[in-house]
Figure 1 (cartoon, one colour):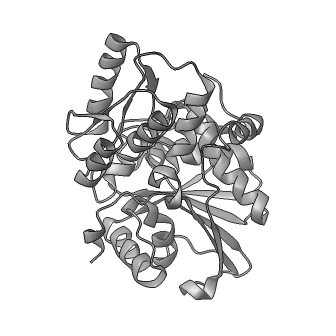
Figure 2 (figure 1 turned 180 degrees about the vertical axis):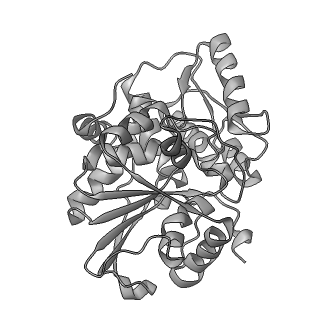
Length: 311
């Protein structure tokens, strides 16, 4: 399996330029958010088509490969499925999405509204993925993976390319991690030229556990961000990328994540899902403490949530 590099990411950016939004980058003084660093850069990827960064990788894979008559099939806790369904509708092909029982009602409704056939199977992502593989063998549809395909990782890396093109290199970048596709794309683009730190829920520590074990391992998954960050094991591509371009992992408690999500709504009027709150949760809780001179980029990765949960 090819490990994406900067050339692959640049090609993905060109291939999908007509499909995606170039999302805003808010540059704020650290003090505006109660922080001691020089600047905070918020990459507002929750404004991306489909409500998350996932559209980048899904459009790139579907633009890179022939699309069979059976269309596409994917297993997803929600955001990857929404991205695949969005791309499939734009490109005029059928889409089937397998979701686990922990997926939110809001994300299932969004999938159905996009015209996808939604199949609920199993308690966790791994269960839905097994059923998805069986369906792909039966139907001949193009298999889309939520985070562990070269085209998907390269597409995710276009986010990092946009940050650098607009503002230069941040001193540090904070990003949420589930299966690792986004952090892999970001690390592959920056190639060690900036510090990349992965934020994970304590109850879904895929990268943290892999770093501790020396290889990807299965973890128990649960907590407030499980529908987005609920991969049971870090992806193979992500693991290979972080061997070349080391990434630190920090763990966050559910309470800190939920508190940050609500504070983001109160102070910034950004309605984001729990997974998108981890970078600011890490800063506000003191899990990550940047130096006074640092410019810190944060990926606000998704907005597929029930707004009632922000009350």
